[in-house]
Length: 262
Image (cartoon, rainbow, N blue to C red; front, side, top):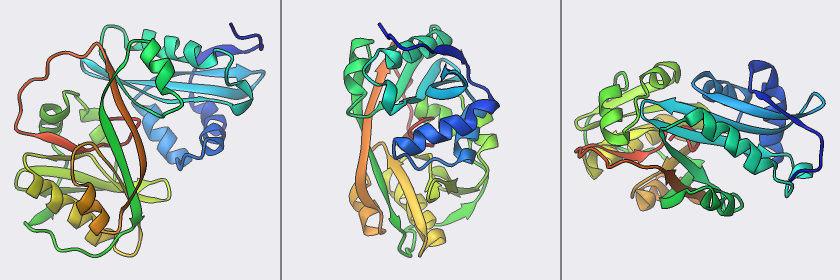
């Protein structure tokens, strides 16, 4: 039971500045624009102490799957049950959908108590990108929602249309390179094989050579990312609740859109 006075309200654009303060307090690199993109495809809640945002949680529904994210509690409010209250609110918004999230070590015990199970790890790589030559041809082109759905099980047509940045295509896959956080981020990387995924990541590094680049890897490629100047700096634990059997597909998600959006 929390003994502090607060109220839970629907997350709206007027709460973005307060949410940004919380993510900065937590040491996360998100800009106001990054919060706004996630909110644009999400339903969510804030906890308010007076008019001060002291907690956030978002739910993004993509067909039969919902991603839960940006679950942050002000440092002064931790250990009082507010995180569980925020989670209950966004889980209600997810309804009967399968739920996914990327957990920090601190959040893991709560999520396990709520029925989430670990399914893997996300490796965050970032740094000053080195120039590279892709092993197969990569051209500019729009992201493919059908391939993304086949790989992830999520219908993210609306998200892919809103992301901006530059779409990159190769035989057997696609990715998007866009502004995020401290520089640029590449993801999702969707590919049917490792060679196509490497080519997409190499082209992103080539285009960002000398600048800051981040990628959140969901499968393999860590050694290759490091060879491009992107050091492994941590990551998170991929978790799910109510998962349904995956539809077999040749396409896999090698890197996430973001840890918030899967």
